[in-house]
Length: 176
Image (tube, rainbow, N blue to C red):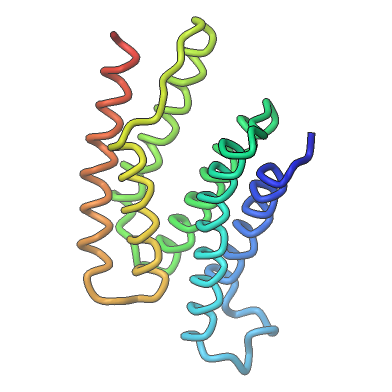
């Protein structure tokens, strides 16, 4: 069923490759007369719009009682696509440590697998405060990295630490 929350998740899915294209295809003739800083601004703007849809699709789904099975698939897929596109693009631009990105993406795939396993056992591994904090800090770090702002690398490594911590929390919750 296509409702507003699912449409927002689909928008996020569509925005992820557009942002990635802006990050990795800067030699494209379309950008010949555009300063690279403006390309950064466009990529960051797309990332912010997509990040805001992440908040609103969940909020609307819960408050309007529009939680669907399709949404349960689309929302995490859209989140992973957005962050994967951002982190890979930032590594391509040499703005993000490949090691930091590897740790973050490994955690994301591990927790996704853990949730699938839990679901197959009839268990639910629900979000934690650390998981939500991880998402916010990662998004802020990506925004800083996209804009090439000071302290972006420090924020990325703080995001890595929170990412590891939240992953351990999820694992602990699954094992209980």
